[in-house]
Image 1 (cartoon, rainbow, N blue to C red):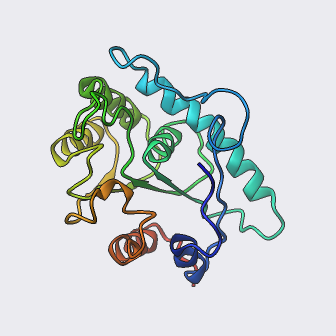
Image 2 (cartoon, rainbow, N blue to C red; image 1 turned 90 degrees about the vertical axis):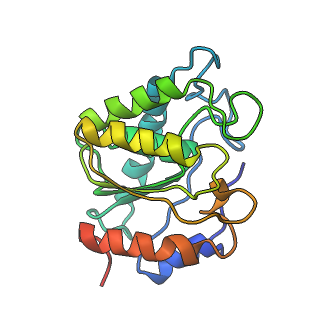
Length: 213
């Protein structure tokens, strides 16, 4: 893995809307040394909840750096994560005093393709339970975007996750756009994807009061 470029479609969308963009890879991803710290472990008994909190620690470090920059606005930080990044962002929203005020979950989760084929998960019951626990202590309303043809997290599982999250006290707006490309799991980074997620994100950020003027 490597960070997206500043000339990428998603970076341009956010900079065109007045945001400073920071791309960061968490420990174990890309060229960083050592193991993936937030690995969920064995497929038969995955540690979904703990892996999310491990990722949340990296997001805290990323925000500490980003918000210390002289060219950064110290308020109004937005965490956007896709797949495991979305999962880590959800976990970060559940910790005490997160530094961000808005959280965008793009197809977030763990354990997708768990049985080696599309639309399977190592332990969907444990995934839903971990989401429930995140919802219990969530700090800010979130936006969740999962395309209808996401092969990692299919629509029914996503609705179960959302129901568990909101019933435990979490606030999240779930949007499930129509099928996108061969696998909607890659909507966020795909060419033309911002035409789908851009209006949803813009509306959410206006609602959170963090869209630059």
